[in-house]
Length: 282
Ligand SMILES: C[S@@+](CC[C@H](N)C(=O)[O-])C[C@H]1O[C@@H](n2cnc3c(N)ncnc32)[C@H](O)[C@@H]1O
Image 1 (spheres, rainbow, N blue to C red):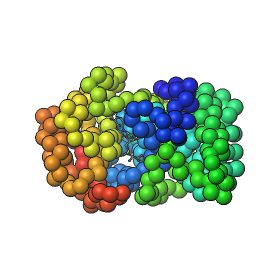
Image 2 (image 1 turned 45 degrees about the vertical axis):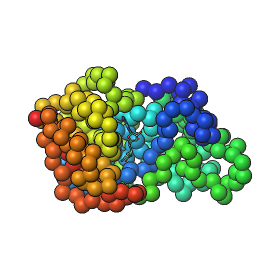
Image 3 (image 1 turned 135 degrees about the horizontal axis):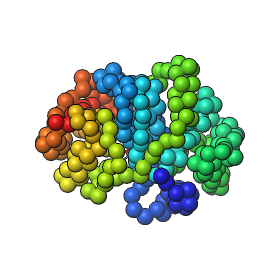
Image 4 (image 1 turned 135 degrees about the vertical axis):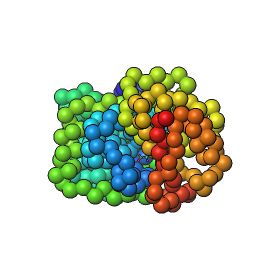
């Protein structure tokens, strides 16, 4: 769980570039073709531990029959963004791009008195964000863009979200029927102790690491997080599938995992192609 006080105190520092330590930016939308991954991996009735990030992965996994998706991210603000994405879905939008300030402010404010404390606090967080944006120099409503700050990493490629209205309604029923289980976790840390075991861990681009020790830590954490025969689903932005540290990663994982590339073409998003693959626990 995250602390609203910490999240709110971090916000102006992120926006004016004075935050010490790692730069924490939120991905506004998914950066990978999750829709094609679901045609290669069966998520139905599975218990999954997935990176939260833009929340799109969580949404896709539930839309494709996952039984339960618990989530984690090194960035605590992804939890605040999850609520905003949920409210936007409830209002018929996939994200905040293209919405005018009045419209987005009204969606955010309408949750200010929510019964659920996390919704209420997240509403406060986003109201504060809008206030800070309005105080920006040269602010002009016609130039207002929700995502144009240091807070967001804009996903230049958005993959389609080919779901019907009734599917989105079922997704929202699922999201509203139980509270999101979210942990702030550095999955490459050597001091992480999982409290539960899963069928699948969904890592997204996180394994794009160069330091051998970090790769070993992720491997050990995956081993502890997964049930027997459990799988890790990965996508990596890499310069080449056999790029040096990628080969090293496969070697390190081979101690406890079977590597299998997914038959999905490499696709260039941002500056590098994306490789899709999975590791199965031996
Ligand atoms: C490159 S983004 C992937 C975006 C994703 N494809 C999506 O659809 O939203 C990686 C996400 O993993 C998180 N992350 C990066 N390194 C991490 C780590 N060591 N432990 C946990 N989360 C991490 C980032 O904060 C970010 O939200």
